[in-house]
Image (cartoon, rainbow, N blue to C red; front, side, top):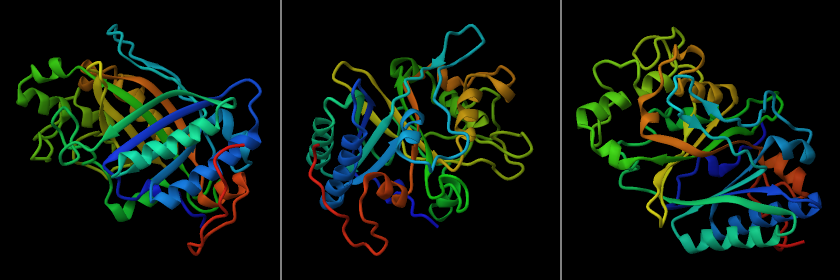
Length: 326
């Protein structure tokens, strides 16, 4: 079985950094490959968790090991007249770094983007952090719907024998919160909107309102979404953290991993009342919506080694080091 990128399942450091890049005219694939190799080596040296995600427009130019049904992220719009939408801003490369020391994270991403200058441009970046006991700024604990740690590889990683084996589909979105509007709600209404209790409790509410978040994103085989019933299906592994900008903009940077892309698309469309959501929009979207969104694929370690020309290190032997830069 090919080896998944280890940072997908590692415990996250206190400081995160998401950097999205796309090629510019005249970009040299050789330089891009070299910088990815050097960035992996630098992250290894510094003990930084690094996940490399590659977009649909770039992956096929780097490798033949492309997963099935790998689509670009397109803007999803509600059809209920609310104007709510999950904006699509598909880019070609994602570098997701995290570590307890922010300076180490900053330096590795800075060196990478500097070395890529003239070949790839930074479209957007978001530094994030751990808030309290893995809380969202809405006051609810994040990731309570994740499978158990030991079950997450089966959920997140393309199985052996399939195209892209050992890799994982990624959704990356920056959600912007209207905290003033949210905090004006009673705790009871907030819990109804989420479908579960506010921290420190994390249990589900006694019943799921059709507009609750869980009724849209917790999928079950019998269609009784969000409620107890048949087994959960098409699960995902979430890795989300809050952010706060100097202009007062706050929200959640949502990252999730899945062995197939379709469950990620389905959840997003259901949140906006589409497909089998019967036109009922997720109440969360009254108070938070994505300002950006992209799909990526995180290839296996072996595929990344082949792309970059690095030596494989199945026994933990350090990869061949390359300096950052052409």
